[in-house]
Length: 288
Image: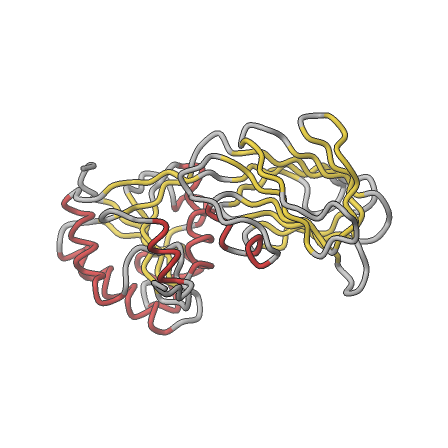
């Protein structure tokens, strides 16, 4: 049991009409039950909620919880908005897979009632902390709930990346790219590249090469406190993405360091979540 919520953020999918309708429904229900509501200003217009618009820079401050209305992509965007402020996120599935979401649309008002009553729990997930040393647009520090990816810009060309683990040289990867994933992200791109599925209860990082052109082609599972450092070896352009956001191109000599974040992402749950049963349902696994 946690504290009752009185200030709620809403982050709808930017294009799905159903998400806009649900955002309006949620805003009305919350207002009718004494809660204060805010919506990022870039998202408020399509929902007809301009009167609740809040600048992105001020959105997370003082929020008790934020409700993501969309698919997994909207969930990742919402976590990025509020991660550093420690705000928990409730996901409402208005997408396809909805692997990260907790609630289906018919249960929206029931879920909101649980929030304002304080009848919910918060699960903590490892987040990837990414630091980029580059003269380009990708420089700086970034966070990702699922993964960071370094991959080739031009189809048919390899990337070459020198890899260090905890400051010691490990090897040079020649591949279409590399994925650094959290346990939460182990069911996303890393999985499609034949990486292992890891329970989100673990605190670890995964390094999975994409179509490697080398004998060593297996994923590595590392402790979240270990540091991976990737240096671009040559002038073949490499693009860096984090949770689907393109952060910029990297050039020869640029470096990317990854480790587990000091703070977890906080995800609202409304009942027991059996990771293995969710995995079974989402991937259509049979009993036999």
